[in-house]
Amino acid sequence: MLIRKPSDIPSSEITSKSDYMNRRQFMAGAAAVGASALGAARLVSPHQSVNADTSASAKLTTVPSPLSTAGITPTSFKDITTYNNFYEFGTDKSDPAKNAWRLKTRPWTIAIEGNVKEEKTFDIDALMKLHPIEERIYRHRCVEAWSMVIPWDGYSLSEFIKACKPLSTAKYVQFLSLEDIGEEPWIRESSLHWPYSEGLRMDEAMHPLTLLTFGLYGQTLPNQDGAPVRVVLPWKYGFKSAKSIVKIRFVENQPRTTWNESAPKEYGFYSNVNPNVDHPRWSQKTERVIGAPFWKASQPTLMFNGYGDQVASLYKGMDLRTNF
Ligand SMILES: Nc1nc2c(c(=O)[nH]1)N[C@H]1C(S)=C(S)[C@@H](COP(=O)(O)O)O[C@H]1N2
Ligand SMILES: [Mo]
Image (cartoon, rainbow, N blue to C red; front, side, top):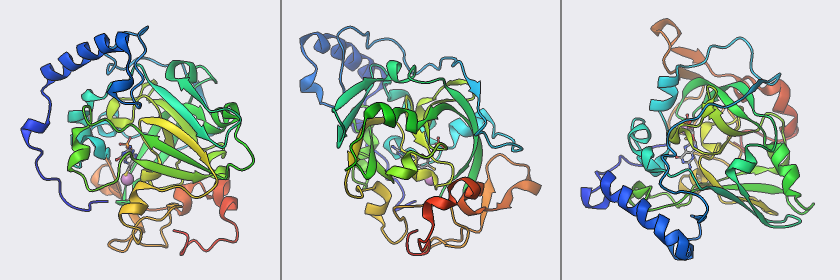
């Protein structure tokens, strides 16, 4: 992605860990009085403790999935959790692992808006119980031409969409990530428009491979990987998979998407992995395999990241060169 290198954030803009802890205590008090003044995105329930350390991971009960990709070896937990793109926590690959402890993942809700039978808000803990959580090993291909293999834990987004009861006028789904200056001061330094926004056509969102993701390697998502809930679309470049989602909108028209907005010639709406369509500044034919021994460090990129049998029909008749 790399629009520019991050400039150092003045230390005055970064709250120290002790300030942060004080803020959390302040919020616990404020919650009793009413949380609205603190920003609509952070719905603080007076019934839940905001002082609990929610960044610690918890074990998940998962079932194996027939939609898991067979015959590929997962990248190490260490690489998956220390080599990240999560610009809300800095632009270097190592930044999210260092900074995402600031993300407070409880209480957490997802607001459902737009063309639905009834707009409502789902609590993360209820959402995690909506359907059995499956473990799915998927290829993960970043538009920057590196890749990993990740055992994600979640269930098909379609299960949740059905529960949202979208109207027939809902043609697209928009995902909005958390935007919180206190927890994510790096967003102020960024030229991107916040909150991070991504979108899918309804049929892409309903595809069984599209995973509503709560964990990886059998435990709740590490903050740097998009806790407490994100989406994962294995046939698309990684940036389509929005992290730390607080809002899902069902809309009639193609929604704004962060990377398309910042560099429309480089990042399209569809963003399907396609070795035949190069990024204007680099080739997409091969990928660097994170954590692989040197003799396997580069491999050819597969059309639709290897998921063509399942997803190619979604794009029948479309010119994938113009709809990149
Ligand atoms: N909110 C948000 N979501 C995001 C990003 C981001 O910067 N902010 N980066 C995207 C990109 S470019 C990639 S490759 C994946 C990385 O996910 P991972 O760090 O879990 O591998 O998250 C995607 N989702
Ligand atoms: Mo990416």
